[in-house]
Length: 64
Picture 1 (cartoon, rainbow, N blue to C red):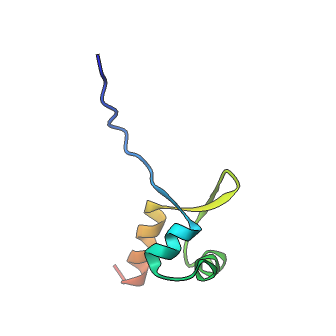
Picture 2: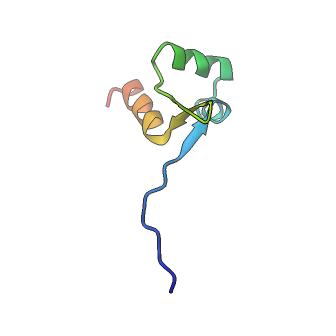
């Protein structure tokens, strides 16, 4: 019998993917992370941004 996994998957973006999404350079994304304007986490030694962190960044930017 096949079971369906209904657990929500968490999407993580690497710096280059965030840069593409924001249409900014990787250096600009790293600056946003270093200044605390864009929250990020470390996963396996690499800096990542979760979908929730990216959504919060957009919400702050548009004042929602």
